[in-house]
Length: 87
Image 1 (cartoon, helix red, strand yellow):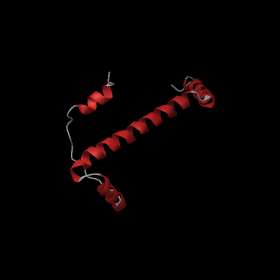
Image 2 (cartoon, rainbow, N blue to C red):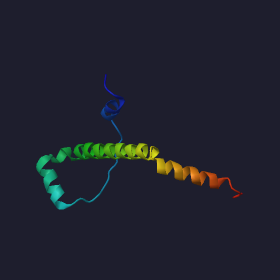
Image 3 (cartoon, rainbow, N blue to C red):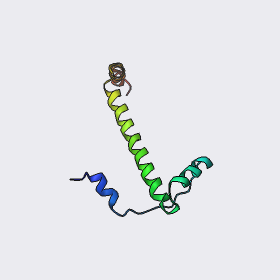
């Protein structure tokens, strides 16, 4: 059985026209690898992969921070201050 993320990608999604600049040498390389009619699909897949990696990296960082004992101790110290007559 396929996972839901792959199923979602196969559905027709609303497309939005986006304009951005990339270095000329990257464009030249892109044109040498991807046909003109396939540029949007290629860019979409590349962006999705990069964004997925970014999300996974952020998740790993959050999980690591959650295990950091010094961070936990600092939060606990500051939490004690929050209740000490700041009202």
